[in-house]
Amino acid sequence: MAAVQADDLDQVVPLFERYQGPLFNFLYRLTSDYETSQDLTQTVFERLLKYRASYRPGQPFRAWAYQLARNVHTDHWQRNQKMRTTDVVEVERKGALGGAAFRHTAAVDREQDLHEAMALLPPAQHEILVLHRFQGFSYEEIADMLGCTAGAAKVKAHRALQALRTIYFN
Amino acid sequence: MNITPSSSDCLDVADLLVDYAEHSLPPEQTARMAAHVANCPRCQERVAQLQELGANLKQPSP
Image (cartoon, helix red, strand yellow):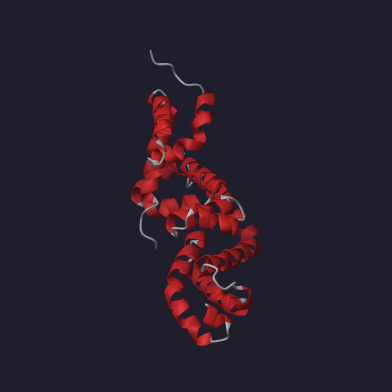
């Protein structure tokens, strides 16, 4: 990253090759949309180039790149917030994720149901579970991103898991 | 004699439930949690659900 920061832009290629997959997975977990995740991943790398001067040498690159991805996702989510709320209300109205209907679906496709249950979490809880459970960030790394202590990050992650449990099993 | 725990007992242990389900508590807290969970069907169910959820969350990424 230091080379990219020094305007050796060819060096963005190995960064892209290494992080494009994990960042796409992160964004896919948050958006549940393949094409949107591809677009947002592209935006992350555009911002990486645009804001390369803000990278501090010695700073863990992975955490910095995920911070860019978090910001890209937040911008996307805010743009689509109204539509998303409508979607959730519609799902709840139909009862597709409630009671027996949900349990039946869970037996058919647990992975998909888990994905849908996570999408019903508040965005901050959804994000912290994806960062910790799927992207493998430690509580210390998440704390750096969120601007809190590692202990607070752990409590947030545990409460997010409890909230997911309530949605998934009820 | 077993004593059925109250809701406030469940509230007291709520923040430890995830660590207990994932076997990451130190021995003293594990013993305290085990004593509560042994007599609390609600927390037994919560622990089982958290363990199932934890296993599902380890599935490969899409």
